[in-house]
Length: 240
Image (tube, rainbow, N blue to C red; front, side, top):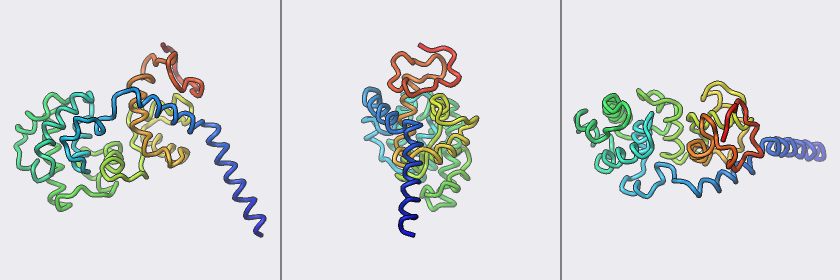
């Protein structure tokens, strides 16, 4: 009986090892870490962010500001707003017009100002002023989608059991050949299934950086890509 169990466990370990060898997870993630050290840090890790206390609330609001907005614009807007108004109580004390002035010129700044105040009020009314540490409850907040909820769980609550998926995190794993999915939600579920947990926490910021600098949506820089040898270049018709 013991020999059978030992053989069974060994077989499972061998299968897992073979899967990792097929996808080259370790090689790719190691190379992307090396690439990350040569480019600008993710938004919430930059030195300018030291003026903002990093909390689930500030991570949530900065993520809402970042939607359809360049990182540099989001960074400055986040500092102007959250450097002084870093709690739901402080935000609801502002008028929508005051929030608009602080976050301009982020994309859709008028809509975002309204949404930020509404979410802050909900956090006060429903959750006693504290961002809920619950993925489903985060999704119930108006304007919060899966990507934002996952980012709050990972970077706000330091919960490593989630993988935030944005356009880069959806496109690149498909391009590499890890997965074959049509939507970010499908990508999230597939990666949770195949990507070893040790890589979940770093996945988002590494792939966002890589997608912004090398593996761009159109005409990626394959000639200087550090993981080119492991990439199937799925649906890449033109590259540099």
